[in-house]
Length: 336
Image (cartoon, rainbow, N blue to C red; front, side, top):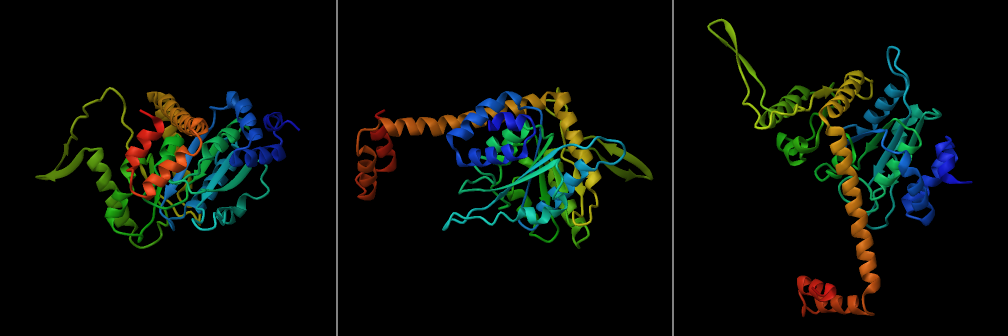
C-alpha cells in the first residue's frame, strides 16, 4: 500500500504506519513527507504548554471535544492531537500516558491521538514533532493540538512550531516569579488559568495581568472628585500594525467550564494573524526553523563522512588529555 496516497484518501491505518516511519526517521518516512508536503499549510497548529500539574491533557481533551461537537450550528472539525512525553535519560523509555486523560475521544473517527517520546530533545517537543504535524496537516485535520512535555521553563520550541500558543497556569504552583522565569510574555498568545475553582485563582490572574501590562500598557481608569477619568497608555513606537495582547481565560478543564471562551480566543487570534499578515510571517519562520535544523543535521553528517579516518577520535582524545581545548579541536577538524 502506498502510504502517502492512503493518507490522502483518509486511510487511518496508512496514517498510523506513516507516523511511525516518520518518527523513526526511515527512508519510507522521508518519502512520505516529500510526497505530502504539497498538501500541507491548511491546518491551525495550537500549542499547549505549561508546568506539570496545570491540567494540560485535560484541557486538550476538552478542546478536542469542543471542536468535534461545537455549539450553535458550526460544522465539526477534524482534530489531531500530538502529545509529547518525556523520555527517561537512563533507559530512553517513556510512559506515553497523556491519552489516558483523553478517553472521551476514543472511537471518534474525526480524532486521531498520537503520543510520542521526546527522545532527549529539549524545548518541550521531540525532533520529529514538526514532521508528524505535516502528516496530520496533509491528512486533512483542521485543528492540530500539540501538548508539550511540561517541564515548565524551557519550552520555547513550541512557539516556533505553533500558530497559536496556549500557556497554562494554575493556582498554587509557585510564586509570581515562576511565571516570569517561564517566559510567558514571550511565547504566550493566550494565557489560560486552569483549575479556576481552586483557591488563589484571583491572585494568579492578577499577577499575570500585571506582567502583561508591563509589556502591553493599557489605559487605566481612576476616580477624581467623583468623575471617572481615563489615563491613556503610552503610544507604541511601531503602531502601524495592530498589537495582539494575550487574553487571560479561566477554565476548569475537568468540568468543561470556560472551554467555549477559550476556543473563541483561539479563533480570534487566528483572525488577528490573518488580518495583520502574521499568519504568513509565522508560517515562514516555522519553515525556516525546520529548514535550518535539517540543514544542520545534514551538514554535520556529510562533514563527518568526509573526515579522514580516526580524525574525530584523535580530536576527542586530545580533549580527554587536555592537550586541546574544545575550540582548538573544532578548528583542527574543520580546518578553518
